[in-house]
Image 1 (cartoon, rainbow, N blue to C red):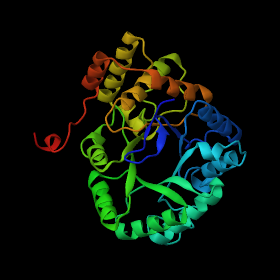
Image 2 (tube, rainbow, N blue to C red):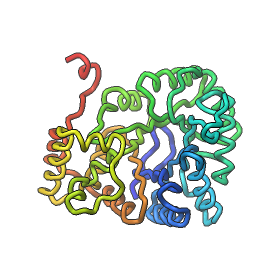
Image 3 (cartoon, rainbow, N blue to C red):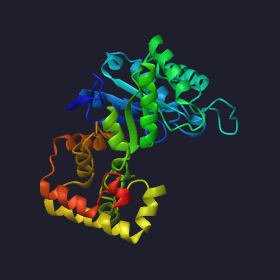
Image 4 (cartoon, helix red, strand yellow):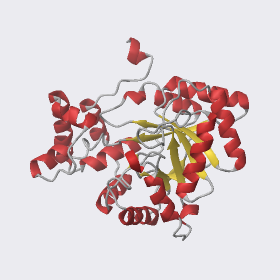
Length: 331
């Protein structure tokens, strides 16, 4: 396993992040425990979850599965850098109450205590804001976070889905308070979705945040989806942005060009999608969400894959990035 520092902190994390969103909805508890054991056996120590995972009537179920895994002992909790997120309303559907969502001090306090109970632990390494809250000032947010740090309930704070200027706002105010501020940003970033390169990643680098890309294969589109279609080995049907991209002829042509390029070089699409991210400046490690051991093994192979300059240049031709700001806006 390869490790790096999480942003400007002294915390060492694996260069792959185990995403747990499938635990519960797609992967049962026994298999989820097996995947976490296998990940830890390889040295993968960075686990990411969220309080809403489990979804619908089962919100919180994913954290519960991780909690029962920790409860097995064997130094599981001590070896793991645990990250979770809060923002969404945790009340049962149709029973939402005011102050049960977003980033108010009262909801931050309520949410961290509930997550600690489900996770069966007394602290969270990285506590992340799942979305920006336009109605809660950062003065209130940092006051709540500082109390949690003082209580030992969390160690670091991170953001998810923040714009570059929100990262700047948050950390400028934290600095004035004498607080550490955000140490990571979890954003959508992959070969097909590179808008983060314009401002989010530069802001993260400027303020010392580690970048944790989610959806590194863009919902499976960078994992050999067209080959699987031809072979009849496709898994779950594409939905959301993935389905939209497959219906878009221009996007479909790009995906085909991507797969043709990798066939030419004898490379696996899913592994290349991860390896490309691992080669990008500022990236701590992409989140991989395996539903089984085979998918975990494929992700691990990406750590050893070094893409040639020729392949990297060809990938940029197929999926050109927007370029840095302000040039991307102006020239």
